[in-house]
Image 1 (cartoon, rainbow, N blue to C red):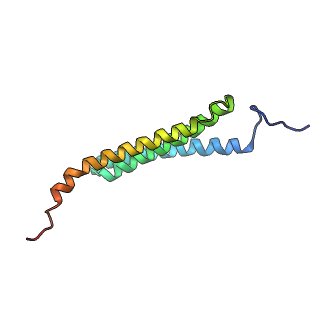
Image 2 (cartoon, rainbow, N blue to C red):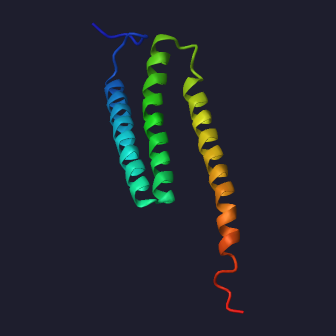
Image 3 (cartoon, helix red, strand yellow):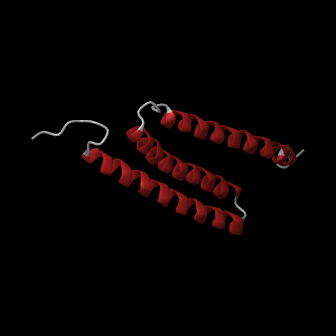
Length: 117
């Protein structure tokens, strides 16, 4: 008796995908929370930014799991993973622009700091 490939067919790669997605999502989210807390205590903008990047990684891990599960039940939603990836990319891009805008006053403030004239 042979197994046919269909929507309900089990594949060994499914277990690997699910375990990596869940593990990545949980670990990145926990790491993000720790980085946010340390960034607040140490008043480190870089650590808070890295916490945001870790949080995005956690969201990405869970989104892979979500899109794989939705695709398994409805294959006409094949574009969900790519759409979530584009949204995550735009979010990171917007956060990067916000960081650049926030840094302009600091750079202007310290521009003449090291001049010895």
